[in-house]
Length: 123
Image (cartoon, rainbow, N blue to C red):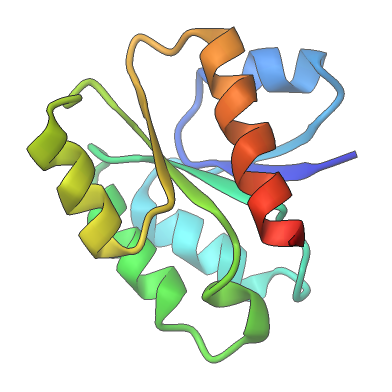
């Protein structure tokens, strides 16, 4: 089973139904803390909502990428956002994210992106 961090409630339900272990956080700061407190390699992928209180998804991603642990630079981070223009995608990439899925989230598109990013990670 894949471990996925969903950094906002909502998107996790369909992933749980698909057999994934899902951890949620109410904001970016808690999400980054959950990652920091997890065992190395504990998350196969992070789904990052961009608009969260306390710390947004861009800052939470930068925080994860800056952590002094092997998986912090390698774990795929996929943005979830209603902002789907090319400049929005570029901003996500610059923050250290590997992919982007537009909201409202289509389950099939999300699963394809998860599989794509986790396959790249294993190469």
